[in-house]
Amino acid sequence: MHAAVAESTAERALTELLERVAVRHPQISERARAELDDTLSATRGSAIGESAWHASCLTPSRYPVEVAFTSARAELRTVVDVVAPEDDRRGAFDAVVDTAERFGAIRPRGRTTAALRAHHAAGALRFGAWLGSRHTEAGTRHKLYAELAPDQPDAWRMLDLLAPRAREVLGGTGVVRFVGLPLDGGDVVEVYMRPPWLDAELLAAVLSRAGIPEATPSLVAAMTAGDPHGLAGPNHCLSATFAGDDVVAVAGFTFAHHRYRRDHRVRAAVLQRAAREGWPSHGLYAAASAPLAVPRPLRRPVHTALSDVALAAGGIEHHVGLAPPATPGGASRIPTTTPTKEKES
Picture 1 (tube, one colour):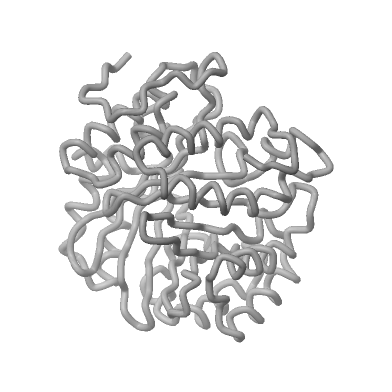
Picture 2 (tube, helix red, strand yellow):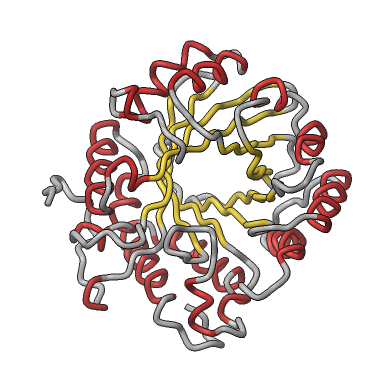
């Protein structure tokens, strides 16, 4: 991928993913490739060499890139850990913002930037910040994911500044994890929480506080394949998205391997839903995840989270994320066409 530095073995998985995507969506693939040549430069130049590709907390496999897809549009999403594993996480915020600006993004407002810098300077951080990019045929939008350190007493005071209604909608649900800020000059903020236990009742409470209680049955059904008892557990997250004082959406997240176990089963379930519902991203996801059609032992899962989003305007969106999967045997010979039928092993 990167002309100046020899490609690592681990990076080859990402290169092959973009090559598969390029068969169907060459412009989307090229937009992603061009950015990743820049955003992964710290990983390529890391002092720990090849190990840097297995040292991030972004994905279960510790890969520094997550690739994601949405049911709403044909869009290739990437989230990238832009600093090297050995670097001080307190510098990740500025690294993300500076990198995004090179690609035309707008940095957060001055008071937001100052508050997050101060928060990061005083906290013990896991990741600090990540850069999200959403590539379509028409262009790319960017999003900053900024950590709110759980050891910091001012995490909720930060939310009072960034999203004044967050305390009303999400207070008492769990630990604040991070916020998502679109880098487009707007005032939208997504707040991510980790409840000690998430079930249908907690989702219903949050949706009611958000003013969209009618979305509860459809969101619970989306997260559980119709079995509300299958949701209850500690390994889930939720988020609420605010635009000023308005709640735009509420989302629930489950780890994909908890819902479907092995990656080939996750892929089959996602493709079945995508075909049934006519996702514009069906072909994108099918190409990107093609190596996962082959059953593998469950070690570190490749898929990350499955998330379902209840929109205040009505309807449910589905999102699926994964780390770039390595091709079995090292050769990229997996078909790139959209499968018409997936055989479950």
